Figure (cartoon, rainbow, N blue to C red):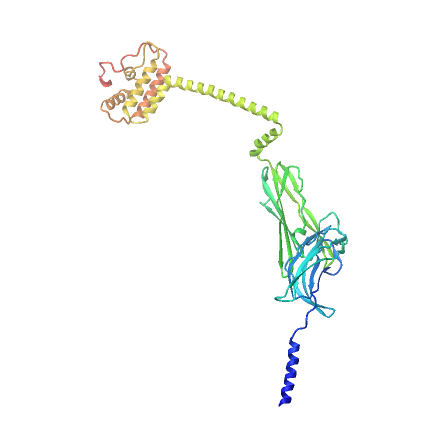
Length: 441
């Protein structure tokens, strides 16, 4: 029994000793930069650069580093947080935090990623003190090659998938001076950021004003895959009539997977622009505004012309008013007012207009035409009865509906009077002389 107890205590002590961790040595750390990929790179291709923060500690904190600029290349900052893994070195386990950023060569030849500083802290575990570290990475050099057959003066895109789309707003038909067109060209590629996609040159077209828009650049990162998009827009304002060509563009596409070079075209556009009469005056003013003295002279001439036009208008208006007044006082004017009154049924208005016409007919002659002389004229037998009817309507204050008939009868009498040149001229006698039954005696 005592022997079994002694053996049990022996193994318990062994297990307790094994459970006590050995004293850990001093924390170690370093920082390394390296190139990813296959080791050879094309112009425009994404070149991955890995930054590894390494330590024998268990945790990292306060990481700080600035991605350097690379001469002849675009640099895209780390697209996401670091991913962690461990590795063995000299029998020790090192924890690694890896950050990855991308470099896109824009020219062929040798390029260098400069050295840069990295700082972070590390700790042996929860509750353990932290230690600060600061390192400088080594410079990284690599060669970027131009794809076979590629032109140095044409934009180059290196990717496994590339799409170009062109759209016009509005549809370029029935254009006239002053109209505007907007062209939107969209570039899309995989494994490239939008900032690495082509920039369209602003065309110069005589007769068309061109206004570039702000590029719309977007990147989509999903599960480590990068898709870039860039939208270039230009507004074209038609300034003159005629035939025009809005130029397109050529982009070289190098597919590193198939090692094929393709030219992708942004198609040009042929348009016809018609004249716009509505803009002629505005264009004339714009042309004058470029010559201040001529503009002042034109304004002065226009003011003088306006003053003369106003004076001429007033003179014409005065003459027209004078002719209208003269016509209103003439025999014809009085007879027209009588005809107008006959279109109604107001007996008093018809009678007054008739007597006024008769008074005007004589003018300054010694004799004048009277109701009696008209009634006794004999050329219109029905006239006396109609005149009597008019007078009865006036006396009884009744409507008179036979005005059009009376108008026609007196119109015939007027024609006879106008053809008779022997009308005696004297002062106008009493309109209703005594002794005639039918005429208001």
